[in-house]
Image 1 (cartoon, rainbow, N blue to C red):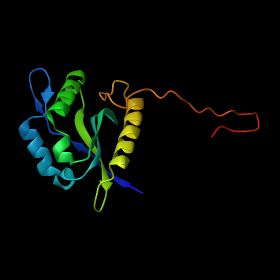
Image 2: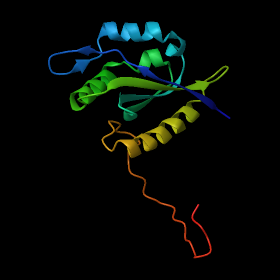
Image 3: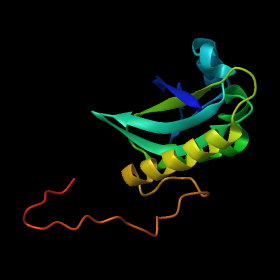
Image 4: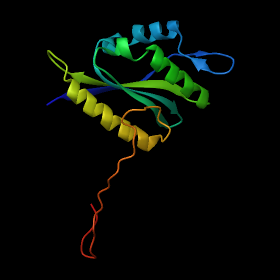
Length: 152
């Protein structure tokens, strides 16, 4: 059985520009300098904004190579930067859901966790930036209750 461990929320440094914020090359270097312990791990990650008491997920991804190689690619940065344009307040944070493995990473388990996390994140933010696996489920389970039974 695959086991995952959660690290975060970890604040993502960003640079404020005239109109919005960006995650610059220096910000990324600073992030990895402070979080080297998760850089080479594999698993899933959630980019979110923390404001007040809550956290709003924006994008869920998976890293089957390493987090360092995958979370700040050009494509991901463009998604994060578009989220900055829509988000007036809140600190950007990253959650890492790290796979615990000895030899070879379990890619199937990482994919299953990613699909699950996208579903949970979609419940918290209907404007989630994920394209894949971001469809509304087409089924529901209802509990039929008689006067003598209580819902679960």
